[in-house]
Length: 221
Image 1 (cartoon, rainbow, N blue to C red):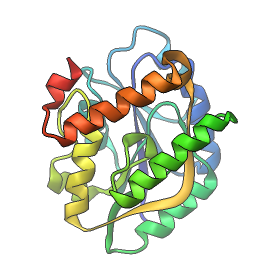
Image 2 (cartoon, rainbow, N blue to C red):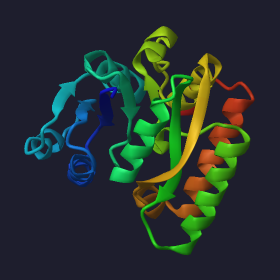
Image 3 (cartoon, helix red, strand yellow):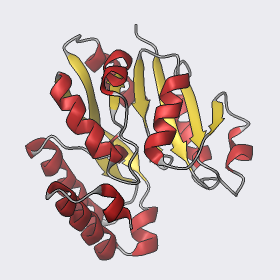
């Protein structure tokens, strides 16, 4: 059975990380967990101490943080989760079942929002269509990859945003890529804090501009 290492990039996540780490620990206590901090000024490191994890500090940048975590991880399978993503034991089982097939180089999960509000069901349907039709999941869908494939691709591009899409595109070219039907749950905090319509429109606009060839550094500015 291949060993799974979970890499979580973090920046000022004292409020959400304990729930994420608790869910992971309950789902499978055997997985290795690495939290890679990008320069938090809150109590992110302190709230991680009660958990059996490895805590790393690197310079800020989600792609850079995930690459640093991957370099320190000991697992055969690298699973990249956002700090506000909650997983279940069923998701771990589906991941293990998927990587038992040597043809699969990587994949992601079905997107779900941890909120009962109806508007998020429409958002989930839209993400499901994008994932199925374009085979283009985002980082909040828990992208995973075999270590040897990850290393051969050079990891995530060092971009200020869209690093997840850049990596997924490269991973799809390396072999069979799957989007599993099992959901993992993302916090609704971004949409609640910034506005549902504004956040969704912003994400779509950024994706569209990136697809048209706009440089991620320009998009970040």
